[in-house]
Length: 515
Image (tube, rainbow, N blue to C red; front, side, top):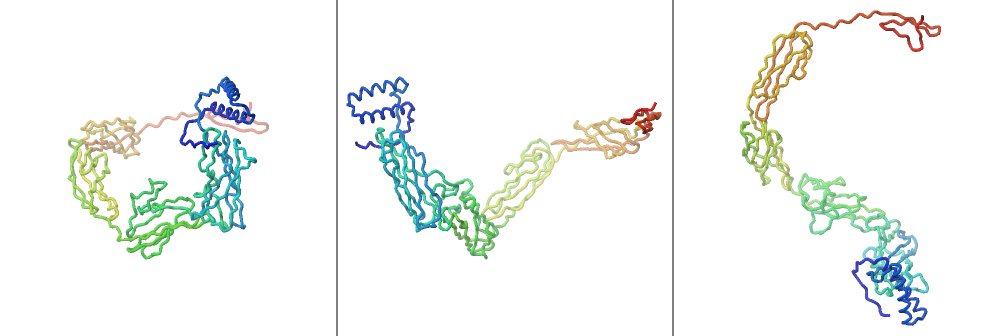
């Protein structure tokens, strides 16, 4: 029988009824071949079968799609072992299914280990005799691993398995790889071969540095590891490797060591640049039972340290609160870093900075700050402050309370008026003689009562206050306390007797009044 060409790239999903129809007709075809039925008889019987299938709703007109073989399982045991004997046997088992059967009688397992070392072995079908129409096929094989092989992680793959061409097409599984076996980064799917406990896995436990643009590395987190903020190799700076090397195995910390301690020093985590010259340092992760040691040696030139630039300030003339809001132009500050330094306003109720202009929105003190940013050649400058006044219009308060008040009246209404018409608030520091509640003065005892009337001002009016002193005289009559006549009763409880006195005496609980 001629081999049918493979069909690739078909994405149509086969309808369940069409699949059942095709499976039943395939069984029918196989049966009549075995019975030796003639072609004419075959067509009659096949027509009857199709009619029956139509009756149960399995119309042959439904589109059919090709089905790929399905890998039900792929295992190998052991998947992590030590080279303690001359040979270690690794048993592989593959289970594949297809409605029309599997065409392969065997397949090959390929293992690729350290430095490209490769091992092969065959897997053989377990059905005997081989039945190509068998819908579920198991392949098994054993690999004898020599003690001479290199320790490390071996990737495992099986060559493609194809379905029986009696289906009218031939499809393959593609290369078969195992499911995830463990959480060991870099060896999740591999066969692990150890030597005295050491896996010696050669894996990129970290990558970088980002400031070496010749590496062409694709970082897992490009938003964090990019070259937009390269390190500054100047005296006084600190180099933190974790900002420039991306760790791929979080459990392994980066270690920093130096061979030029006069120029640069380290505490094992960071690098400090202490003198000009060539700094040679190494970033590494330590060897563990799983991973081989990894290191990256860097050589950089350390130059003189950065300095703070001086900023030259000028003066801004005081302003008035007329015609607010208004905008004024201010002086410009140029830094030796090569850029203009723009001000920031820290008094937003008075002024707002915008480039070389300031918008004045209220009265009071306007304060601007200037500071140049750090760059590769200069440190950030000191913080400079520039202030000017925005004067507000004056206002007055009329406040004329009586000079003497008898405290027998207990309270006094306070009245004051501001020339602006604004609300007045009152307060007193003579807390022993008087107190204030809103616009009411509470008269407590004879003595001087000092009262302050305040108008808080606005964006164009200055605040104002005035004080007045009132002499409080007289006394406040004490309330008459009625005399309550006392009464005494005699209470008894068994042989115990108690006297109880008061305006309305009562016996304690358990006692009764003695009659």
